[in-house]
Image (cartoon, rainbow, N blue to C red; front, side):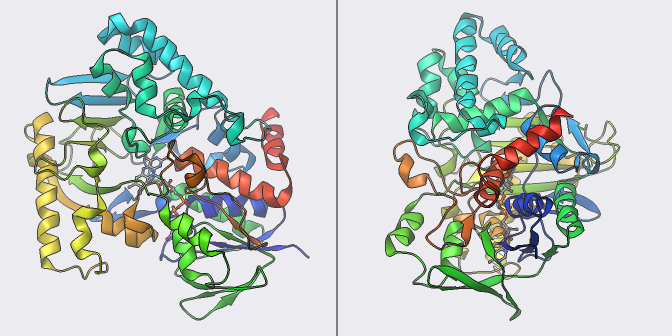
Length: 502
Ligand SMILES: Cc1cc2nc3c(=O)[nH]c(=O)nc-3n(C[C@H](O)[C@H](O)[C@H](O)COP(=O)(O)OP(=O)(O)OC[C@H]3O[C@@H](n4cnc5c(N)ncnc54)[C@H](O)[C@@H]3O)c2cc1C
C-alpha cells in the first residue's frame, strides 16, 4: 500500500511538496480553499486578460540553476514557457528626484560594470561587495542543491548582519547604498532587521538570471498538479480546511468547510503557521508555541494596480522596473503612511505567449502597510462598502500620478484599471495582515523567526514560504527539506542531481 499524504494549501509550497512526494511513491491529496489552485501562482482573467496574483519575477530557471534542476527532475520543464529578461537590464531603477535611471546587468561582472559606469570611484568596493553576496549565498548548501546540513551556528558572522549595515560596510556613496537595496520589495526588507543572507540569496538569484512566464504563472501550478494526479493523487479546489483533529500528538483527520473528512499517514501544512494554529485542536501545541508564532512579525503588504492598455499603445518592457521618489527611502516603504504615498513601487508588463513589442497590460505593486486598511478589517471580499471602493480609487489615482512622472501620457494609454489591497491578499491567501512573504526574518532575533518543519505533532510537518525563505526559489527548496523529513536526508537532493547529470 502506498503511504498517504494530506497537504493543506495548494500554493507553491503545497504543490511542490506534493509533486516531489508523488514522484517518490506517495499518494498525495492537496486541499486548497480557493476555487482555483496555485496560491501565489494563481492567475485570474479580467476583461479577457490573464493577470498573475503573486509570482511575477522568476530566478533560477537558467540551465544549471536550482529551479531548472528541480523542474528537470520533476520532468515539467517542457510544460513551462519561460522568457529570460534583458541581460543588459534585468531591472531598471528610476529616481524621480534626479530623473536618473540605472540598469542592472545580468551576471556578476555585468552587474558590477554597469554600476561602476555610474559610480566609477566605487568600482573596487562594488566588486568586493558583490563577491561578498556570492560568498554569503555560497554558505547555503541547499541554494546550490548541495548535500549539507545547514545550521544557524555554521554560518559566518556577516551572514547575520543587517542588510543595510552590510551594504554600508562596503559602499561609501549613499546613493549607491540606496540603489543596491533596490530589491527590497522582493523580500520585504526592514533596516537593521533583515539579515544579510536574505538579501544575498535574492540578489544572487536574480543577478544570475531573471525571467518570467510567458502566459502567466498558473502553468507551473498546473504542471505540478499533473504530476500529483498522474501518480494517483488529487488536488482539490474549494476545500477549506476548518479543523485538524489531533489526539495523542497525532493528526487523526482534517475536516473541510463542506463537511468532508480526510485522513492520511502524514499531514503537511502549507499555509501560514498562524492560520494553522486557528484550526488545530487547542491542546495540540504548548502555549509557548502559540505565543512564539503569533509574536513573529510578518513582512509588509502591498497595494496592486492592474492595468489593461489600449491596443498597441504602450511598449512591452522585458524587465522589472522599480521607481523611487528619492534616495534614502527604500528602507521605510513598509511603514510609510504620508500623503505622498507611494514613494516607490515596482511595475512590469506581464508577457503573453508569443509576446510582441506592445504590452497588453501592466501590474504595479506598491508596498503598503496593513494599517492603511485596518478600518475595513472586519469586511469580506465584495462587501467592504462604498467608502472602501472610493479609497481604493483614490490610491489608484495616486499610483497613476507617479506613473505620469515617468510617462507623461500614461493615462491616455489605459483602457481599464483596477486594484487589490492588503485586505485582498489577507483574504485570498489566508495570511495575517496581508503579508506578502509571511514571517519576517530578523537578525536581531534569529531564533524567533526560525520555524522548523517538524512540529510536536508527530505526523504533521510544515512547508511553504514562512519556513526558511519565500518566493520562487525559497519555497521549492523548503519543499525539499519537508519531503526529506519523510524520505531521508539528501535523498531528494541526490535524485535531483542525478537527474541533471544525464
Ligand atoms: C503580490 C505578490 C507578489 C509576489 N511576487 C513575487 C515574485 O515576483 N517572485 C517571487 O519569487 N515571489 C513573489 N511573491 C511571493 C510568492 O508568491 C510566495 O512566496 C509563494 O507563492 C508562497 O507560496 P506558499 O505555498 O508558501 O503560499 P501560498 O502561495 O500563499 O499558498 C498557500 C495556499 O494555502 C491556501 N490556504 C490557506 N488557508 C487554507 C485552508 N484553511 N484550507 C485550504 N487551503 C488554504 C491558500 O489559499 C493558498 O493557495 C509574491 C507574493 C505576492 C503576494
